Image 1 (cartoon, helix red, strand yellow):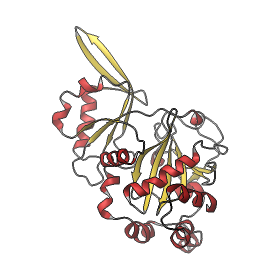
Image 2 (spheres, rainbow, N blue to C red):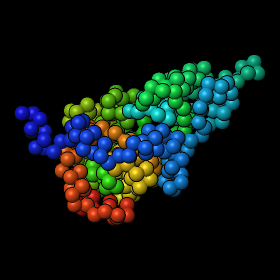
Image 3 (spheres, rainbow, N blue to C red):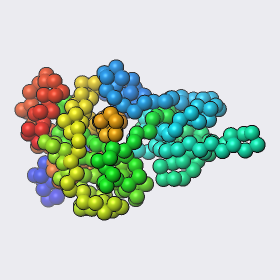
Image 4 (cartoon, rainbow, N blue to C red):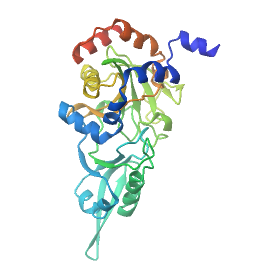
Length: 317
């Protein structure tokens, strides 16, 4: 009975997501372009798509020996696994502290939650990444030291601690659904729905919020700022959708999730891509994906430019 009701509402389930959309529309040979964030960054650079700058790639344990000599030159940075998922293994360093004693310099890294890590703890975390602790496949991995992105002022009343990101589901190059993930105290300042971040559905026509949930429960206010979640309208909305649509052309995956962040100085930039985007976006929007996916499959014109595909989506969804 429940499954029939979900089907009536157009809710996409895991089996149909895999069988009808991912397997049929995603070339397995292209998965590494999305799963490996180093390859994603290289492809994005070739396509002229902006992403956070990668300061360095740590590929082996030997590179850790002189790590402190390199990171002491950065004001802030992010450590992330190249093949990680769901935000696992990511650490945000917002400040580098240098303490000099007896002619020696000790480096401390202040995290986004204000906890301090010494250089040995940073190396230990990166060692875990290299061992594959956070890898999708469980195989050995690379660690990315990446530029930290600052928060756009539009989110000042809607976010606790970290940087919100915008998830756009793209099907055959057409944006079909979107949400913004807003960090909370319970999510430790991360835009991670599993850890307690807010998922706020976005209207594709104008980038305004239409609903918000925390762990599948509808909420009206941000639990930490007390601000109403309805009424947020994202700037650069058309540019956000066009960026997401271009990712289809860049990696040639028919069903994907594009994660985008708004920066104070450069507008929207691509954070990462996902070849198996989760289904919680439907709860955030109180809408099913199936009717939209089928409209694209059956009615959407082929061979349009990204800008034209976005116009179709904004008009129809």
